[in-house]
Amino acid sequence: MSTIAILGCMWGDEAKAKIIDYLGDSADYVVRFQGGSNAGHTIVVDGRKYVFHTVPSGILYPKTKCLIGAGVVIDPKSLVEEIKELEDSGLDFAKRLVIDDRAGLVLPLHQELDRNNEELLASAKIGTTGRGIGPAYADLTSRVGIRLGDLAHPAYLRQRIKELYRFHGLHLASNELKEILDSLKASWQVLKKYCMPIEHILHEARLSGANILFEGAQGTLLDRIWGSYPYVTSSCTIADAIGIGSGFSARYLDEVLGIFKSYATRVGEGPFPTEIHGDLAEQIRQQGNEFGSTTGRPRRIGYFDAVLAAYSSRINALDGIAVTLLDVLSGIEELKICVGYEYKGKTLISPPSHPLELNKVTPQYISLPGWEDDISAIRSFAALPPTAKKYIDAIQDLLEVPVKVISVGKDRSQTFKV
Ligand code: IMO
Ligand code: MG
Image (cartoon, protein in one colour):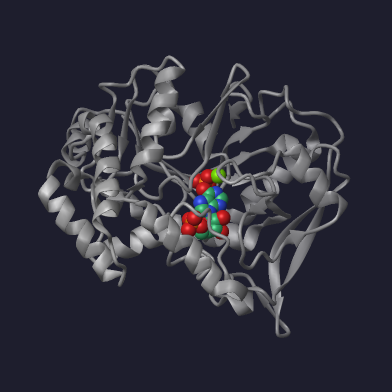
């Protein structure tokens, strides 16, 4: 048996789902433990593309049970749509999908608040996905949030919704209340069969020696506390969030696998020390199809930042690394990796915690030769061009964590172990 956490270690979009899918054929369980439909997890199988927002990526394997933990926030309407789309594509998961009844709900009110907050912040906006994630988590922390299990108790739910609007100082007309309740009732008709606590399921799975994968969403640098606050998401995304969000203590993990792209990207606002602009950024954006899978926004592009990556590695106690999208770097003559920051005449090897300072650091780079050849058909480390091997070795040496998996393309088949 093994319990492995698959975590994005930068600003999200590290191709976590691809690695979940790669390791998923032997997984008995795949578990989401935080985030919500802000995630956009893409898997390509035989040329067919699937994008998951809330449903765990393991759903494509016919025997894998997929659990959505208490730490996830669920937009009932969008989850019902996602479920219907997956059913329409021929997947059967009636007995394989379970959603913890403690999971919080994202309501249309939260999406409205998300938009309003962004307008209010104007010059300091976060650039959220607009999915209502921040306000939904905030309400849960304020103890006025609604949880999935509340949908089973209509009178209680009605009262809670009224109080939620009162809490926000908003008037709720009776026809509006009815509309909200009707919509939730319709979603509940679909969701109720999946709804039950998952903590004991995971407990028994562990005792029976099952293989369990935990699927992180977003990434360490978007963690609410350890990321580049305030330009972060509203959940904790690091390894220790697994216990909080699923009830399966992080102490039981056998392995934490950190996912990094071979370069860096970021969507939304916030510091990005190694960001690049111009032709090279555009080349990587096009080659890597760096457009958000949730919002379609063009992603910001940068060089691999080993300072932030090593920070991430420490926080998550990584046992191994997967480097994804290595093929995207083919044809770039000179590759750079940031190995330190210069700040106020000093060299920093760990990132400053304040965004104003992280914004002002000057990255110090090492330069490595690139490779010309298309590597997307390569299936072993040994067969990579020597300069690509050196690039991987450099990442491994700088992070002092072994690179265990490499991915060289979108398709399920384009991944190999090192
Ligand atoms: P996956 O799981 C990349 C970013 C948003 C914004 C910030 C806050 O696909 O890697 P939010 O809507 O969460 O309040 O937005 O976080 N963000 C992501 N960026 N990948 C994601 O998910 C993201 N989820 C949120 O762009 O900067
Ligand atoms: Mg994404």
